[in-house]
Image (cartoon, rainbow, N blue to C red; front, side, top):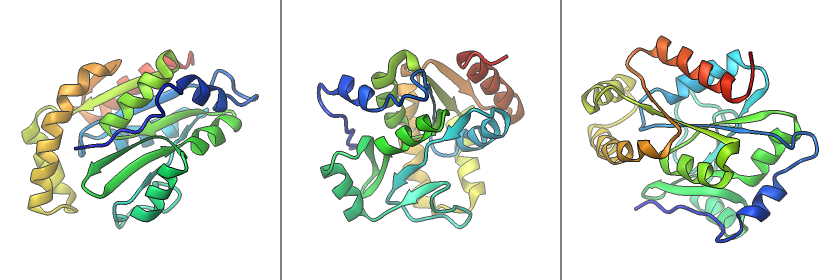
Length: 212
């Protein structure tokens, strides 16, 4: 079962700590989805289209994939390092997505991007997205990217050629549960046609950031 971290009763303190002088109205754009639904592709598209947003790099303990870059896609750390960060209160949220595979957002990462005058865009797991939305409320736009069906999702995961049959089965079972949380998000994007979904996501984000 996933573990969600949030300092009890300390949301106001966290928000004050994360309000730099340069961008007091900094906003968060949150993309969450089951694995393989297409959120990473959509986020990369938006980063190429909207100049004043920057990607929040999460920490993870999962192995680095062949095409991933340390410090660009994720901060890859050990379980021991991750647990030390938990004890030190360095995460604004974290979750054990799969057994001994942790993901988390550092307070310092949001602070860094807001200090640079950027709004922050997240490619984050479903529970992490819900947690951030609850903390930042109207300052966050939370978008859930859903596959047309679980069968289509299974096909996409197989086409990645990065997962074993057992891992795909685990991901599909998890996706089935994650889809039940879609209603917790501001908008659900059903990614049947990737190009159309990209354009719809771009329009939603620009409207939220009040960009013409």
